[in-house]
Image (tube, rainbow, N blue to C red):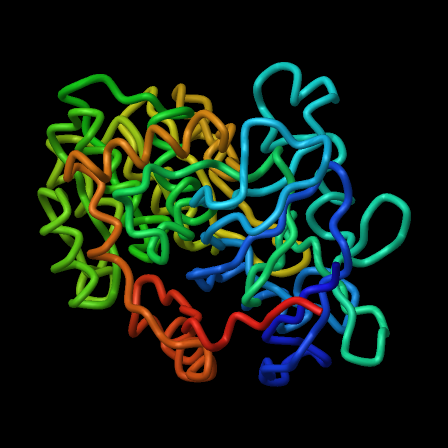
Length: 377
């Protein structure tokens, strides 16, 4: 069975994604076919579209997909057609790190998430002429009305969750929340600072409140984002543009420094500010992705005084375990995903990409109308 789909295809770096008709060949025994209802746009998608992440072209991006399972391969268990799912990153589930419960650092991550092909070299997508279109971006390539994933990275959703809004849980929101809840693990009453209030930073703010942090300092140049952070649980919001010494301001607002810092920008300046905002022996987690190499200099004295700087991928989370936790928090009203999201129909993808690049929206989600979901041939 071949499925026809509408997809946003990247044919050249730094050029707009264009909607095309593509074909999804018959899925393999360990795969699932998902009819996508919504897919978030992540800054990693933008970086790849600009050529900052190696990925073969032509390709379909998108790695924050959610939808309903259309079909499952013969070897798939625990999932069935009709199940609503959110898709996360892929992992082999067999290497040392996966066996240790840390699939975000899977030894086969590059091949599974950035290779563009299956292990045998085939692609999950073709164009209408049968020529290869590279998929498997983060194990899904969900900027399409249909996506191929596996039981390893498809997480069933409760049926009362709005499936079209759930996609961002699979990457950006998992990254920010997982960094706080899985890596930093602040004790109730702790102080934390979050630098950069995109989807990753906002989810870190929400997770900090879930963890019981008493002081949550949010730092971002955009007034609308600072206002939203305060609504989501930040106790103080600072503008780095209006503050001469950001780290000093954070220390002042937190009574001498924060116990933890999360930075989601990835520049040397912001990493140094985040480290400087810590009281000894605090911990700073750096999450911001920059294309290519990103060398930076830090003051060793910050580390000698007991501070820690650590990098985190995907919130050091296992999506099969962590995403159901986030969904439960969402259903309880403690992790309000809907406050971060603005939806755009897929035919307004250029507007959605522009709004994401400019920071106009925290999280743009592309949605697929019923008549855009293609069909079987």
